[in-house]
Amino acid sequence: AQSVTQLGSHVSVSEGALVLLRCNYSSSVPPYLFWYVQYPNQGLQLLLKYTSAATLVKGINGFEAEFKKSETSFHLTKPSAHMSDAAEYFCAVTLGGFQKLVFGTGTRLLVSP
Amino acid sequence: SQTIHQWPATLVQPVGSPLSLECTVEGTSNPNLYWYRQAAGRGLQLLFYSVGIGQISSEVPQNLSASRPQDRQFILSSKKLLLSDSGFYLCAWRLDSLNTIYFGEGSWLTVV
Image (cartoon, rainbow over all chains, first blue to last red; front, side, top):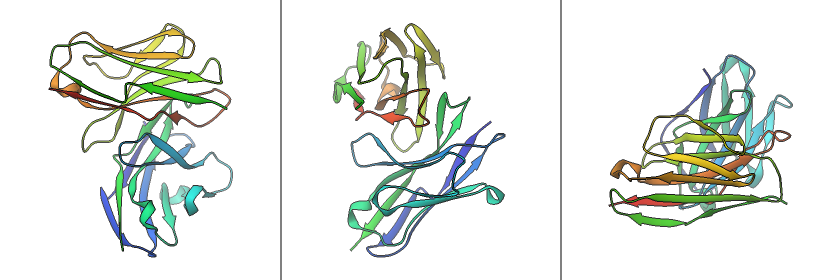
């Protein structure tokens, strides 16, 4: 069955530093993979998605992720963190022919000045 | 463009009381609709999804039920709330022609 694992429930970086949020997936079929961001007390906003086209996917707010089949990973990166990036980030994989999304447990990104 | 509305945004209910959370999608037809729950310190759990009017699939046994009385309306209900029903409930939608699920703003439920 498809699933995702997010390593690290909390990640702390300084403003201007590289952001790296890790996601590994398990899927018996080629997956569709997603990163969503959740700001406090809000719903989820799509950051980017991989749907079997280019392996390097660029999203909103300067984020990007690379699909690596050999490593079963889809890590999220941003070269330089902003204070406004502080939020919770969720990795997700499709299940059941895209009827459903299965989410990881989330990673809270903390950005310090 | 499509929009999703979810209400109420915040709800405090006593144990044993009923629940009704409502979600509507505008600007599209025949969407797939979803209810997710986010409990404190945990990820998102899919509760129900629907591919059409009156068609509801339940993902986990629980104290909640869902209904889809109209094409773009999805309702989450309970006859008697439990403390463990507290959490952040998110409605979402998707079209078969799109490979992305879009979420509403969520509803905070606190059962006291």
